[in-house]
Image (cartoon, rainbow, N blue to C red; front, side, top):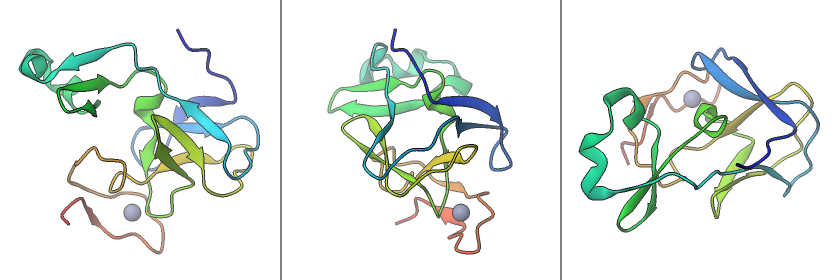
Length: 130
Ligand SMILES: [Zn+2]
C-alpha cells in the first residue's frame, strides 16, 4: 500500500471526481506515484467488469495496471499540469493548493478516445483520434 499525501479526491467539474492538490507542487516534483500492485494479464482483461475496464492502463506488452484510488480519478485536461513519466504523475508547472491535478491522456499511452470536458479555452474536443 502506497501512502498518498498531498492530494485528495473531490467532486470535479471535468468528470464527477477529480484529484486536487492539498499543497503546492514545484515543477518536476512527483505528485502521484502510481500503485502498480494490481496488474492484469491481457488474456484476463475480458474478465474485468465493464466500469472497471475504463481504469486499465497499459503496463507492458502483456499486461495492464488496474488503476487504484486516487490515481484513477486524475482527469484529462487540454491544459494539464502533470505528465506521466515511469508510472508517476510529474508536475510540469507550479501547482497551487486546491488546483485539480490533470494529465494529458493523449500522451500517457492509454489510447482512449473520448470527448473532453475540461472546459478550457484551448480544449481540443475529441481526444485520442490521432
Ligand atoms: Zn479539453
